[in-house]
Image (cartoon, rainbow, N blue to C red; front, side, top):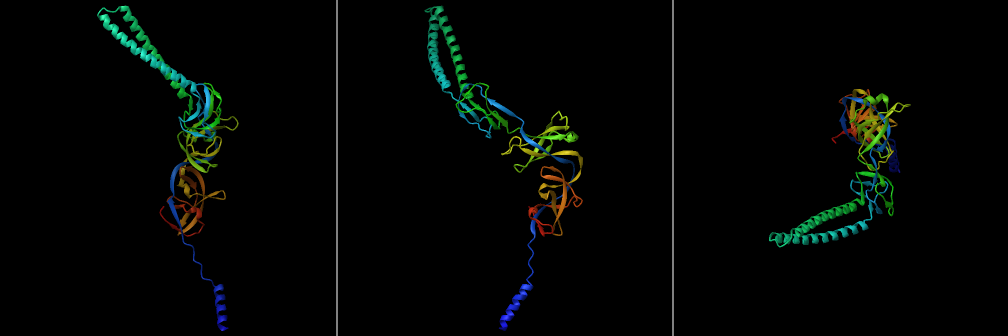
Length: 350
């Protein structure tokens, strides 16, 4: 009984005074230096994706459509077939012309032999000059007919080639305009094709910041619907501003990415002021929380969350302002997504 009471007391003491729980091990993180550069602040403009080169692709010969390869949304390479026409009649004409050529060639060989014989007899005064001249001109006429026939054959073969309407450039089919079984006349469009190498973002830009734009300058572009970030290039600004809003249209060329569609929204970071000194850090260091931007620094082995104002984004770098940051300080660029303020960290190499 005494031993049972002792055991119960021991269990009660363990419950009242549990062993100190061990702290979790430090979180492994990668850091990078903060630098300082003279760079312009930017503002974010919302624009739309558009194709700067759109063509209604048409055929050059007439015929019945037997194969319709183009369909809306199809991505094609230059030279790939869009529509194929029936060539049965053309191929029959080619066959007839080839047989005619064979006959002409045989006649030409026979006439060449006759001409050679008459030339020999003429030298011996055994043939008349008239007979020789008639054979000579017949030979020349047959040569011209053979040349004409060869040109007709080339034309028919070109018709066969042109009976397949091909994509003139790399692009995306926006609209199919013809179906199999329909008759195609020369100049009739078979589809609307947009060039995938001429993709632009069009954004309305205020006249107050037009002077800060430079053609050829690299600009950050975000396509939110696809969750992708791209590097665009400032192209042109429309020479006409809207009368009421006093805004012009800025074109920014961007590389094609699967899933991009016409009129999809995109955000562009454009210069909005003169160049100024600002802190630059990798964009991987930024954390978005509650509509605000933060970074983590490391102080005495602990993670410290610091609020920042993002002034610009350039490639994989971001320009920020914060009274708590200085050039040369280190910010966490890998592992920051799982950190908590005050958490112990261990800095490691990437």
